[in-house]
View 1 (cartoon, rainbow, N blue to C red):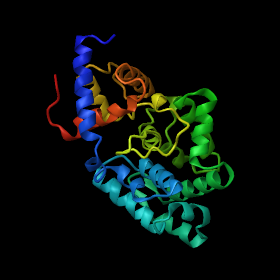
View 2: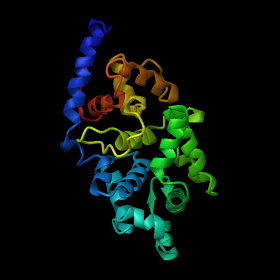
View 3: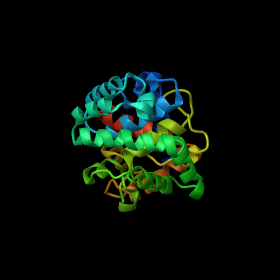
View 4: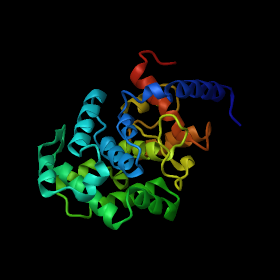
Length: 260
């Protein structure tokens, strides 16, 4: 049973999440990129690439992700499957922060392998998840496969390693986009991964707000903090804890004053 203070906290989180989980939120958020597409594979690929680039200023994330989609002729799935050597070479010019052309070329090549020989992103994540009913296991298995096609050492840092304690914020956000199905912001394209098992996408904003309102006590923004925060949020909404990502992220990014 939830006590008085927790009831107040639950009401606050429900109110804030409902406010931010609206269509207006899409336009200036990275999730707007996969929303440009209707084909499932286009949404998956654009979402995965955009999530990978999602650190720093949101306007710049959108600019760079949109640029990549344009270089793919706004057909990321067709590009991944059939880009010519000349088209792949153009990707060597891409750079966003520490993600450079070499990383970009590898990502497209690895995605090609995954779609041609491993059933695609949904199959890879879903099969791994169903094996252990664990997002942690799915993230670990995905990283192993994705980096199995001889990348340069530098490229591995762009795929979170939960075995080393990473919070895997960007991958958890990508899973939120693909799995949650409320017909508003998240796309809900993958139906075999249970939304109840999603983990909170923990970044500096979410962590700061969660600590400020007493949801999180661990100081590091690592996987143990993800587990602690997600478990707490499950006590409020066991079927969909990632719903509260909207509340915590929204308060952290858009609101100057936080509840004490």
